Image (cartoon, rainbow, N blue to C red; front, side):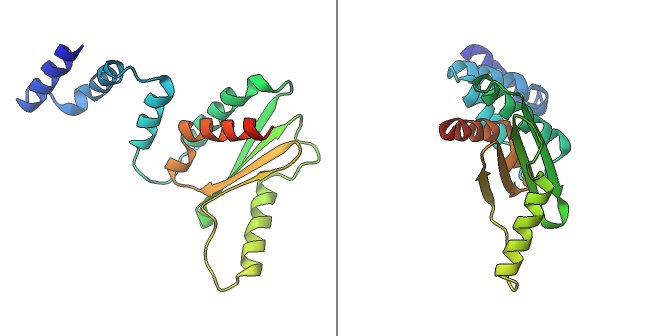
Length: 166
């Protein structure tokens, strides 16, 4: 393994290989060399992403990861819905246990929070960068729409916090 890493490094420095062509293989070999766990590998991959606006796929991956993290601990199905407020660079994720009936939607929660913030501080133009609201059968997570706020690692961490409060 170390010999393979060394050979790839040598070829990159001699310009016989392009780093971008072997980046995935090299990362995999280094992860294996240090015997990183799945979560450690995921954290490195997630945090090597550049800051930027999220895409629907990012939220989909986040949702799938949070369900994978917590679903085995709950008997009822878990629904996750999200609303992206592009004008405010804000995303609200609603995690619903049991059913969606009689629960405020993630859209209503976001509108309420925005309204309250602007009512209390009409001259200020800010939003909390991170917020969680825990209710009886649902949880709302509110964050800026930066891709680093909605990674699979962040979903795992959020899932752990949910389980600790359950």
